[in-house]
Length: 115
Length: 116
Image (cartoon, rainbow over all chains, first blue to last red; front, side, top):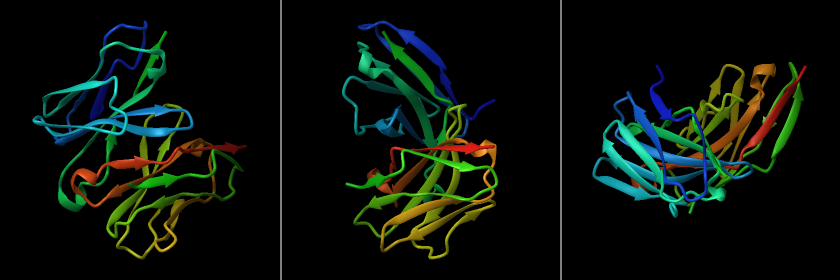
């Protein structure tokens, strides 16, 4: 089983619908992230969380919200999806262990299409 | 704010040859980390190599090596003996030493095609 699991893997939704992307991890990391990948733009940070009570906006948080239900779970919601939110979404985790807290571990991504 | 620039949107190389992917970054910090991630068609993000800024020695991982030039803020990736499985998007990433600024910042990526 994957250490960082995203569901669903692929999703097509209609404009105006609410949709939730889920992420769970078995690595025991306290830091979790949501990124968005668009062609030619790389990965951009949407939200990040250092623990269940610490949630922070990233570079492109408008139109998104998140929930850290537990240390292992971090969900991303689109309250009212719009076509320009069509993208590949990644969840990532990272430990906080001093110098060891450098590498990020990624889920396999959710391909979201808003029509 | 830190930025990461990959100036080569696409590159191609013949199988068994060597290719170098470029990355430059901008920061006023002295302590940081640099990474190269590979994203094959499966879209999984795979860490290829990392470099700590305080280390002068360039990192190597088998066929992958970096040329880290701290003064020039340059961090290029060299792939030797290219293989068909190296075909992927490659992302350069920067991370500050810690705290709230310690999030990964990615470049826009370079699409590498290895041709038989």
